[in-house]
Image (cartoon, rainbow, N blue to C red; front, side, top):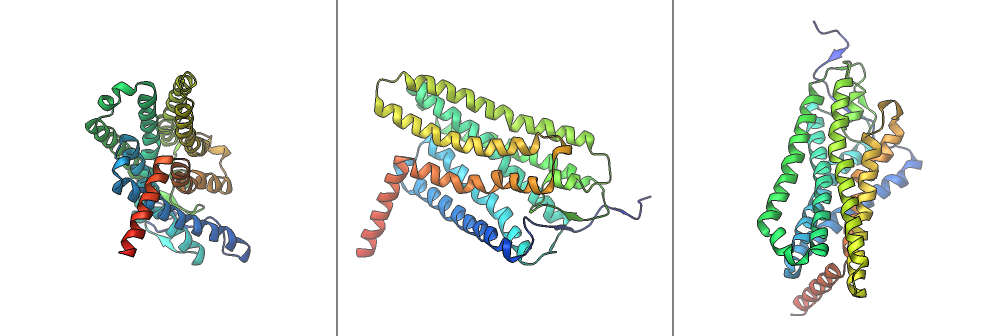
Length: 314
């Protein structure tokens, strides 16, 4: 028999990032501007990579997917977040909550794995350039990409099914701005300690392990770059790697802080802020880092603007 307070099918309510007050209008306006910047910046990056043949290389093949992930991640979270701020108390169905969990985890874990693949690509390009066309051929790039998406999707599906299968009791209010596994576990009336251990193991696989491999890869790259005789080559390699490492530190750092802390150290306010740093901040930074610090992308942008001007004049 189910107890009266135990609910298996119930609409949840996301309490949101901030309450609707005049004081909080400014940070929500900033989030709206960030949302616009993510969509426009990443869409422009995808367009430039698509139309400029000089960017049809493995590095930009993966970068285009990173931009696509960032757009999807932002579309999954921010519109609902802004709607809940404007109209508090909007319910979200278990199916809607499950869809959000699945899509957010798919995009987040895909980005974790993709950043490791991008580090491997830079390692081969700088440390083994003669073998680069073979080791990073078109087929291998597609296989690596398929592995990233498949691994992330399977991981997300497992956590989505398991989380929604838990019984939920009492309050249906999720003290967060999107459906995230740790926030939902707090509402469950069952013992979730075993599942929390699985979440921890899964987080270790997709966070510290890839980030450690990335740091080791860039240590090898740095060692190789410092032995280069060409100053120009050193500067180009360091610029590419430093931009990548900036994204890695922000993204993995926030993810590790969120998922590898003991549950007793979590607080809703802190979790919301940390979640911003791996769901919204990286999508804003990525197009800026990979365009403003990348001569190839800036050159492609100038060419595209020039073509647009010539077309208007004709």
